[in-house]
Image 1 (cartoon, rainbow, N blue to C red):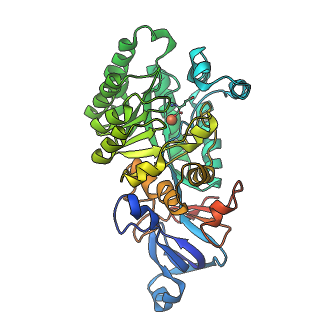
Image 2: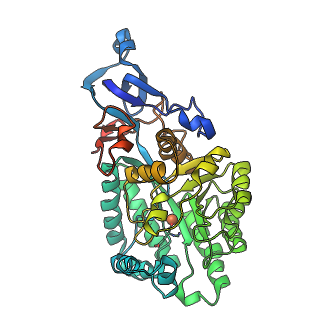
Image 3: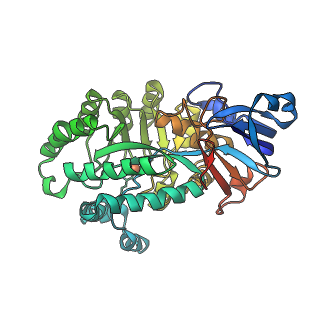
Length: 414
Ligand code: NIG
Ligand code: FE
């Protein structure tokens, strides 16, 4: 049984002709079909212009027709970087920041990630899953259909497993497609700040083997930055994960240029995220390694830092994605439309580039672009219906929610 959607004013397919990502000029081509139509089951069965439907309809078992005159359809948005499962909140610290304290100063005084670690350690799997469920379903209302979620707010073996179990629970019970990432190397636990190596030993010798064996994560992430992991420590964590089949990702050069992007490229990281202070050398190395630049403009906005050099990255041919980084400290939003708006206004991206970055390139950054991220025959029927007649309107009329319906696997979930 299939559903026919027709008379879609602007049907944005992000067609990649089978390619798994878009770079440079290709990001401008989002395969828009005016007055489009699509036939979907759990996957896209047919896609084209409404005027071309003709006899084609008779080849499908269509039991519902939906007229989308005046609407825009896009592939479901892919949020490829979140820390959605955590305890407590940092509203009080945010208030301090508004009075002048910086993100780094709060962290140095024992707050920041440590505040969330204290609260997350106390929370149960159920409590963590409840927080994640609320935020993930809220994200779906704003158009997210696929989402990566990291651990990293416990920094003990039991706690990291507890967070990953909460993430697994979400992927088993929510309609969204969820990619789990282990991030034991998000910070050092305060108990072991003076003995960094023994915590890294735990990550390498205990956490990674257990997590891999129990299939609790697909990726392994490390925060390589000023005051966090060094490039050597980052390399050790990522190489250990690779031995156990965990794909490498890294948080890079968010607070300062420490050469983290080059470290990520040399480790074969799938993505290097943040990059507010990435060097030209780092950009060249990302390009040569085919590592995705995961840009998180909400974080630059929220902690009042300079934005990542999106134009330079795209123009240099680096595969570029955008994501929320949703977390309680440095960027508390689950809304991908806000991120798309920040990308065009504050990072110099075009509307088309922002759409490519939030769909197919985000999907590539979590290694899911063979099945989602564009509307092409055979791919999953994950899409959103927006209440506007043209995709540019999503950016033009900002600060509101354009998403009327969210569909995953050919089923309406919002
Ligand atoms: O991606 N950069 C490191 N980690 C998070 C922030 C975590 C927090 O402040 O709780 C990030 O920005
Ligand atoms: Fe992050």
